[in-house]
Length: 187
Image (cartoon, rainbow, N blue to C red; front, side, top):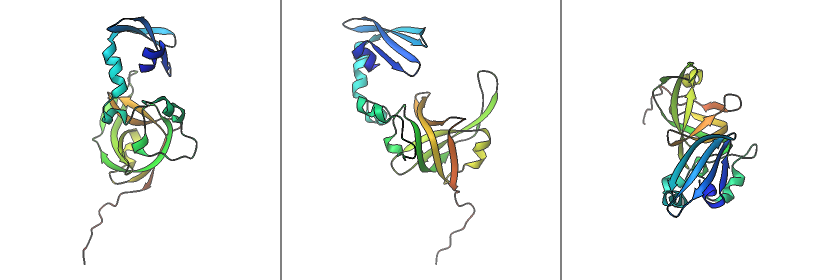
């Protein structure tokens, strides 16, 4: 939105944002996907200007300065830290502990396919981020596990920043299962 406001046009993957008219108090934006109009909205200019000064809890995950844009795609083999992850980055690989696992939910896709999903929160000591885990992979992950994530992407779902793994290229591997049922004796 900031780029569209400054330059008149901006693109985010297949979404294109273009200013149709610019006023003193507000501007009209056209949102298109693959060249097809999606929506048009009149947005107050002060709302767009607020994006320059996001609260820390949001700017931590967003690419606010344009210099970071070059680092969106991580080079093969490089390791990421959760605390440095930003919205839109992909190709991320790292090791982390599962610090939380939500209840499993049944969902249905738009085409009617039933799926199971749960959210696990990952932490590497630099930050935490949720990851959606699907179907048969759910039973392989437990709180306390050390996992390796490969080729992940930082996205937003229902306003929350989270990791996602492509079905074709994303990999989630349990490196070290949490200790289960071990009793600790003190001497």
